[in-house]
Length: 254
Image (cartoon, rainbow, N blue to C red; front, side, top):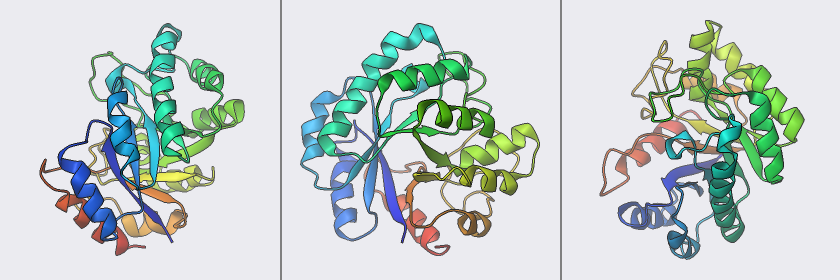
């Protein structure tokens, strides 16, 4: 049976925090995947009192974390140590990392290996990056070859973002669902799931059913006994009703 995850950020200690407690109590999800924004350690105690299983996602390029470039090494370590603190104190099963922007996949492996964290998972990415303040145009970890390189070099686990793979397949002009099958053969520890439109090379994090991804095909490929975090947009600051609709949609395919 799948473990369904709610994606939140460490800054979400106000409106979504109470909603998360209510929805967990009512059986809408099984765990939280918590993105640790830098310099939010003051929120850790509140997350510790939540009594919901929490897994950790390290900050990414939105917070200037870039494993693919050596010049970011010091800042990367600073940000990682905060994610590690959350993971340690919340008993996280894993810590998800992005491979970085531009740069070199060899540098990504070198820095991730330096962290020496047995909980580390590398996440696959779209090939094209959203316009961002770091100026990156392409993501490391969009190809199966780069993800395999990280897995072999670092001996870490794999977080399979299905939407990212479909975006990358469109960039590489290859069969979309065959690409999903190939990534799934890397034995993911967990999945990220959201909707989008076929042909869109940028990840939009749409609600399930708001794009045209073939979830019947997708969910016949993946291992339904793994963690599946819904990485869809939040439409309201007062409730998580949109998340409930996503869960209902997902369960129709499980």
